Image (cartoon, rainbow, N blue to C red; front, side, top):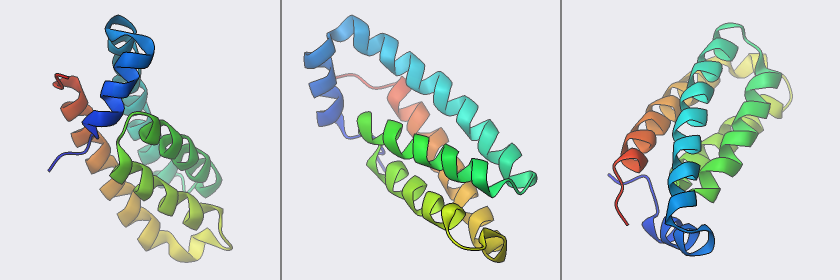
Length: 116
């Protein structure tokens, strides 16, 4: 299953140039890897406010890079964490964080190996 919309990355390459796209992809890979770690820490600490903020950021970044499924998953997580009484949805939040982290890791691997 592909996570990355290649058309979006092709357009980025046209907009910013291939060299800059390489730099941006490196940023995406590094940043996303750190965010996966942060999600897990925030989940263990039951810091749902921070999880919501992290999900919001990941939602936007993933959309920019054409990782649309992860963007949608992050949006769902953000809504639950920012909703009323996220503590009542702990099990669902845990499942969504695990799924999002799994998919983000797969997207990182895919984008690392992408050729346009």
